[in-house]
Length: 266
Ligand code: 1HE
Image 1 (cartoon, rainbow, N blue to C red):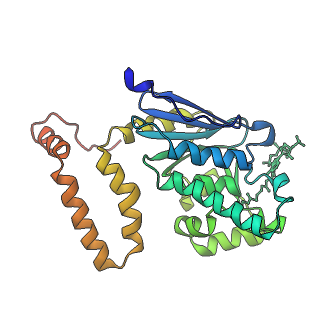
Image 2 (cartoon, rainbow, N blue to C red):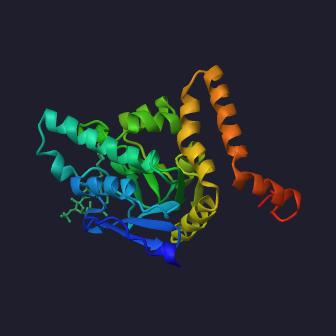
Image 3 (cartoon, protein in one colour):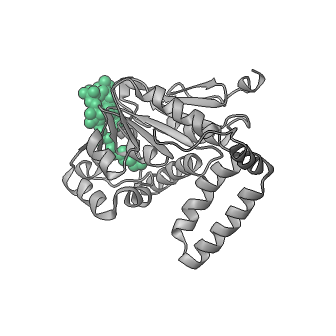
């Protein structure tokens, strides 16, 4: 298929990527360091998401080895002064912003440690599938540091300020089922089943109209931050744009002509 041929951006050796039809699969590939995120990896993530070929419709992000990610590369942290640390955190923000507000939805597949910066990366993705081995923590508190990859903004929206505060104060971990109940993941699957589930979901997402995915990634989060009156107005505008699209009209006609699947419980 010709659209499977568009090349993916060049990446550091700590990241591996491949095409699978309209999907791109990105893997953290530094298992000897538990996929700790060093500067090269974080820059590589930004490059990957800002230079995705046009024909990629969704991304699946996973980690090699026993853990999704042990977070920030602590060895690099010891070498920075205050201004360099600010710049470093801003670099993480740019990279994870490229994930969350990039061109296509991202499904992450989580297993083992999803901690510190690893959890911050996962929180920037749109759909999270956790294998039963996954566990979540913010060990920054016990390391004498603070989060710097966007957790202060993204995690309170997922689990609440109080829970994030308590996670950091006490260094507690949440297991896969607890994390699921809190909203850290959308699915829990058996060990080894995460990638297949992630790919299945990404294929479904890739089959949506582009304007639907755009609205969900870029419009919905902004509406959620707005005052209700502006939000309702923005919703009406987006709804009109979406339903006026010829592809949407065709999908509606297909349903009315009984050519489209029903919305059944599954
Ligand atoms: C690392 C890192 C790392 C492992 N930076 N090198 N994150 C943490 O506080 C979590 C730190 N990591 C761990 O608690 C454990 O490594 C794990 C529970 C994830 C895995 O344990 P295990 O027994 O499988 O591996 P290990 O023996 O601890 O580590 C294997 C190697 O990876 C070892 O290096 P080696 O050269 O001695 O073989 C470890 O040093 C290395 N390694 N994790 C650097 N994180 C933007 S702000 C975000 C702030 C944060 O993310 S803070 C949270 C940091």
